[in-house]
Image 1 (cartoon, rainbow, N blue to C red):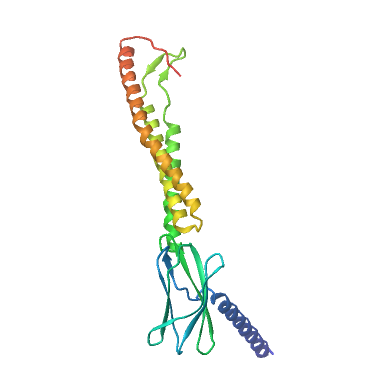
Image 2 (image 1 turned 180 degrees about the vertical axis):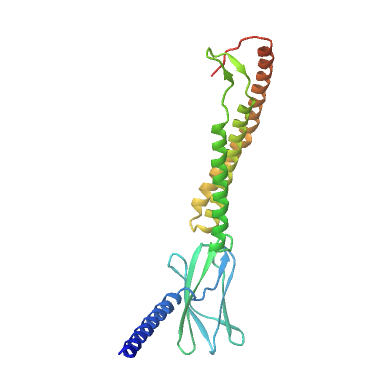
Length: 253
């Protein structure tokens, strides 16, 4: 009786295993389907295939928007069983789907991708961008935390007279400049990601335009800001001399 139950359990386990393998195979098929590759916008693409047949015809090749770019074109036998069709109208970014059939009537389907850079936005590329963005964001948060700790004004008594000049307060504007520069870095990375991998170039161009505006604002304002800091530091230096002589100076907001 026990042996019979064990045999039934083994049969049930084998059935479950077979069902699992079938499902795994079905899920894996789309993942291992061939892709011709990723190419740069504007470059020609060699649509190649290797088939044991006498002729191959490119039935249709579609733009990313679904319109037909090529229809019923014979592919050239370039060497032995290798057939090729060169397609050069790759001005649109996105996935190009195509299908072709051999001399025996067998139909095949494939695709290739066109990006601005010729590189696909895969897991490795996205991980690099994400790590860089997270690192910059953490730096910004850390700098803002330090800025909030630093004194923003001089030490004063109850009546508002300056007791001591705080030189650490000048670290605050310097660190704010660093925060602004890191923010520019984030905007630069995001704009380049958009230009490289988003089919609609308008988004990337808009973000990159914002980056250029912010960059030139920094170029113009940085010298003015630096001069303001130096002038304030010089005034505080003279004020410190007066305080050391016993002159009472009221703190200004």
